[in-house]
Length: 249
Image (cartoon, rainbow, N blue to C red; front, side, top):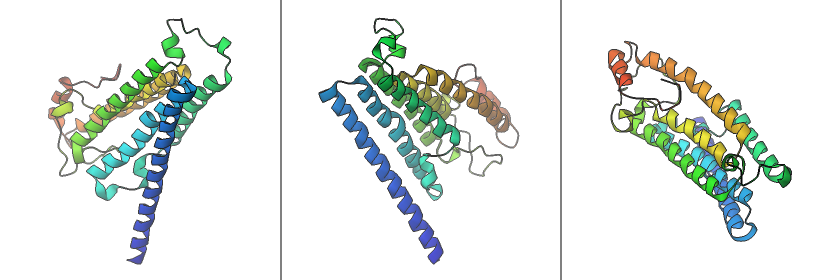
C-alpha cells in the first residue's frame, strides 16, 4: 500500500512539474509576442512566440486534458506527449533549427525578396504568421473535438480486440470525417511549418506525416471492417465519409 501511494505521489509530482514547465513556456511565448509588438517589431520574435503557444504548449496541454477527460485511470505524465517518440523530438528540433538559422544567421541579401509572389511562403511576415497560427489552432481543435466526441471509443493505440463497450461513432463530426483526429493532426503539422516559413521542414514534415497515416489508416480500417469489429456496417460508413488527407481514401 505504501509503495502504491508513493508511486501515485511521484506521478502527481511529475505531472505538476510538467504542467508548471508548460505554463512557464506559455508565458515565455507571450513575452516574445508582446516584446515584438511593442518594442523590437521583430517578426521572427513574434513567430517564435506564436509557434510556442499555438503549436507546442496548446498541443501538449490539450493532449493531457483530453486523456484525463476520457480515461482518468490511464492519465500519467506520458499523456502530455512531450517525448512520445524519437521521430517527434527530431522533427521538432529540425523545425526550430531551420527557423533560427534563417532568422538569425542568413543575411537579408540572401533571402527572397518581399515583393516575390513566393514571399508569403518563404519569408516571415505578421499576416502570414497570424493566419497560419489561427489555422494551426483550428485544425488542432478538429482533432480535439473528434477525440472528445468519440469518447471512450477513441484510442491513440490501435486496438486489435473489440472492447464490450466499443461502438462505431457515426454522428457529429464523424458524419463527415472518419478520422478527425488524424485529419486535424496532419493539417496542423502543415500549417505549423507555414507559420515558421520553413520550406524544408514544410516538405519533410508533410511527407513523413502523410506516409505515417497512409500506412496507419488502411491498416486500422481493415481491422474495423473485419467481422470481429463492425464488418459491413463500417464498409458502408466508409463510402459516405472521407479522410480529408490528400490521396488517402
